[in-house]
Image (cartoon, rainbow, N blue to C red):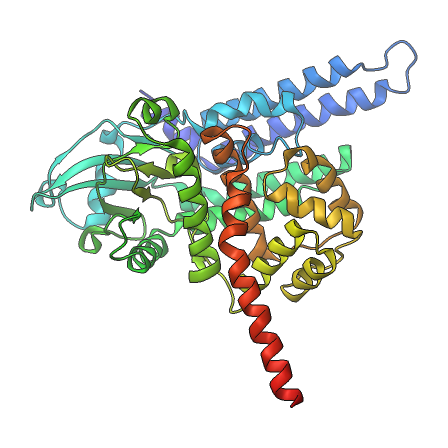
Length: 437
């Protein structure tokens, strides 16, 4: 258990800035030394030297995240998930941050929960399980039972999270500038994406609204289940949700032992996202396997955690669908035209653009070359598409775990979207003919 004095120190603005600064400075000196050694005969760094430096940097970020918590955990998680742009030796120490974020004793959060409720815990809950069922960078989750008898979960945001975010993000900005200076790698878009994510995840009132909106969109569906929000005891930093039974898609062996058809689950997830993005225009933006479960019936999907839910502008989904379907079918001219219609700029060589679409749809062999081509062409990706692309990358990883070697996402999406794209084209042609006649 962490002492009160240690917790106070970790939450101190000056101390957090200093710890982050030391980590950044050590990494700068580490890489600067290697760069200088390139010009000294007999001391030129080997590939092994760079790998050791990357490993030490990854471990240092891991220590910072697990010691300081807050946004530093989120930074480590994002970097650890970007093996497409980060050295493997740097990424490896950070992978555990997705699954093993240290929780806090509920006793240290009880007063915070009661302040958010505006009354004693015992007036609302008959029981609260003090052992958390999940812990993340900004919040943790506990099972509980309301006085009225309903089984629920309490998602409690750490009390200092909103106050510390600007401090931690300033440290991240300094690190990004250092990386750009040392390695010529511009991580500003990644930092901007991270800032947007954290701002959204800190707003529990918005998350409650998003949960209810998607729950309403699938009302009556037997394929998808979304937990009910208990508004009467929720706030901007506390969410009380219906407890829904299920096995997380992280538990591949448990699902297999329960007789669940993993391939069918993968197809169902892809179809669910196709429906949310391209039909509803409002979707769950964080398909981490821990946020998706299979209900005890073995087929119903349970969707959790709507902090990154995203609404698309009118017409955006139609253009994105056309870009994907035409890009996958080889109609590069049509794919680029559709991309430009939704805000892409500098799409560059058509072949490279096709590789980008195919990489997004699960062709990992083209991923690195597609990223390099995007950088070389200075392609500008619209912000509304960034979160779609991120969701697809996560879904492709999930698809590979459920059915290795198969591109379930690409197949299910194209099957779902092709009729919509053809119908839209037919309607457009009919309108043009009507205006011409």
